[in-house]
Length: 190
Image 1: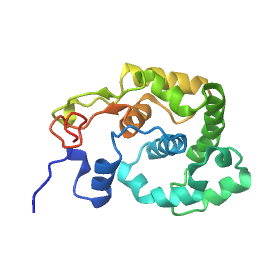
Image 2: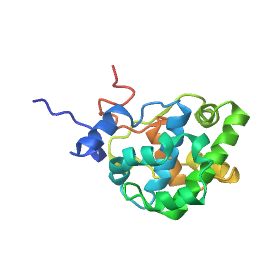
Image 3: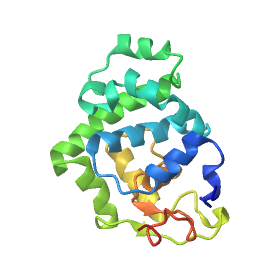
């Protein structure tokens, strides 16, 4: 059986491999999926990404499949229900941030016709293609993620620090940080 060389972070876990091969770094333009990734990246703060991936289906069930219109309406009773859901990350600040972020997300949709139009404008509608050769070449944040973070915070978003936003940019394909030799790098995809 042929061994495929992937970005080092993908590791041996199938959940990581599937995420690496099918999602990470692929341009994403669906507003609900963008909302999901923004919330999940915030939920990951201080934790390993695999923790979030393993809880992703439970998050989808608990957060109405990340429908921002539904999440924006969550009340204290829903917050308490989420806090008792062992399938998700039970962090009151992150849960409350998700609700507030849903409201801010809806405002951006109204203003720009979609979150996709808003967020992808930062990169001119096309991914930034980097060509790293090792994980040490990947930044935790950039001046662009700093700017997006500041702009989102001004709009009322929480858990959107520059490092979280850079991870979001990588996840949704605004930035292609697959290793230059990785078969899933933009320059290598067939």
